[in-house]
Length: 249
Image (cartoon, rainbow, N blue to C red; front, top):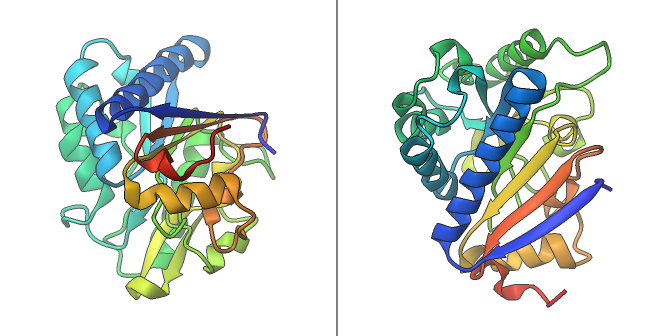
């Protein structure tokens, strides 16, 4: 299991967004100071959008944006201009509003009609940027994740092939219920991070959160259970509504 798991329950969604923004800002300053750069994988969804808005509004002048490098933990198989694109959402909420060099933003080339080729290209981008030793996996400072009501995280959906992937960094994962591919980081990448932060908000997520954190349900059914960084921190930032199904610790 991971070296540390922390569950923080915030009262309101707004407090959750603020805690997430604070976590990112603190990690960015620390990494830039210690290692000269900060690497983060963003997630899609409404909860991170609010976090990104906060960073763009409140931390525009206080963060070392020129030493911050942005990647995406997963992406829909759509062009970057599509309303469903995670890149488009993050770009509109934050990336276009802060003084970050374009070269520091690594988006998934999901406009490629061949999802597998897009995944392969993104994996090559990771390898080129991080230059890991043979057999090693890129180590992100922070990976932001969400939790679906079905227990999925990134685009690792219940019962999908990507859950078994041990060697690839990025794959095109076929998701039957949406009849489409999703391009996603694999578990080896998620579990190599220095810090993985789940952001979970709303009563619709309560059953999945309880299943992941406190039940014996199978990880094949609730893939978020498979995320436990080998040498990093695992932090769950949840609001009271999402935590409503959890038994008191």
